[in-house]
Image (tube, rainbow over all chains, first blue to last red; front, side, top):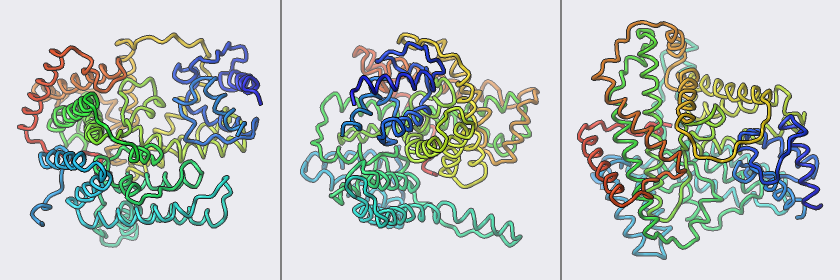
Length: 84
Length: 486
């Protein structure tokens, strides 16, 4: 699966489900958690979304603010599991 | 021999300084034996507390080391046997925690319920047990989940649990960050040495100058019977207590991080200016970070994901409330089995859930561009965190009836009896020093920010540190670190 496809699915999920604003213009490198857009509890939802949508498991220890703060970071982490 | 070990080595004592210097010299004199030297020093350090503590640590180390090798299966193909070994390993970690930490209290409660004479089993809690047990559990779970391979070197693994700078009160390290440091060549250059010594200085100031100064002024009667005091007394001295416990524990962590840095081993950060947190969740992420992250990884996230898999909605009320409340109840239980710790944990979890519920209603706006933190923002956050501390914090220190009494008296305004200038001057200066340190660290994101200052300013800082430590140690308030009781 291409990373752009992962990114678009993630963008839709984050804007619709986590930010409650499907029209939000989320940038690839925009900090989502450290900027206060979303709280770190939402990382659990991103973990489960990756399981359901891409059939990959991101370990709990990797669901950290440092490693998952931007769309790019999350998409790349998922892509790494998808392409294993 | 018995004279040498007649009293435990306290981390802020001169014997500890001598102990560190001797270990440091041996460590660099025999570079091929560095792990063995640190392991020997760690066990010797622990031996000065109680030889029975060493036995417990050894048993936990051996059981975790052996069981971890039974958990390693390729491609996550977990056999039933591996699962059984995992449960065995977890039980062997939890058993000493139950025996040494909870059994005495449970027996006493049982005797009270059955109206029998009070039972006291006089069980002594091994210092640091609660901390190294969590490290053992995380190691087993990480190996089981295929996150790390089991350690092939028994001495490295033994040092992971016993490493003396973190043995007494953490930070709670993870094997995946700690063990690789033992195989790398440890080079401590001038910059790292300066950083380590600066951390030791900051740690000593936080503990000996700030925390001990507040401790010396704290009126113990206020915590024994808060009902006797009006709101202004309760508010001021509760805030003083919060400053004291923060500087005590943050001081300890900064000090041991500095000591560890002398051996080229980086320990985790435990505090990140919690008084400037923007809310309850941010506070949780900044206070006792190594415990918060442990709970997040091994309790909150697995529970949260389990619930989300069953009902994948972030707005489903049980998904919002149950994971933080359960996680913080576990945190309360880790601190102690007494009902007041559970009340504190439950309330903190509830505060996190409420904050999350409110955030779901908050309109999402474009994030502000990065800028330096403002003093006005920090002060606003500080006021909010003190309010949270007044509402949620009391059961951390007070028994449940005293907590209720404390809360009810917060609404009882009368003339203060414990706020005379001569009594509050020393705590107020300590608050100011603590907040100044925090502000410098917050603004620069550097725990030893003054190392970036010009030489003359650094000299002034160190002159102040020496003078303050000299005056503080003459006051002879030799209180042990609070978190070593856990």
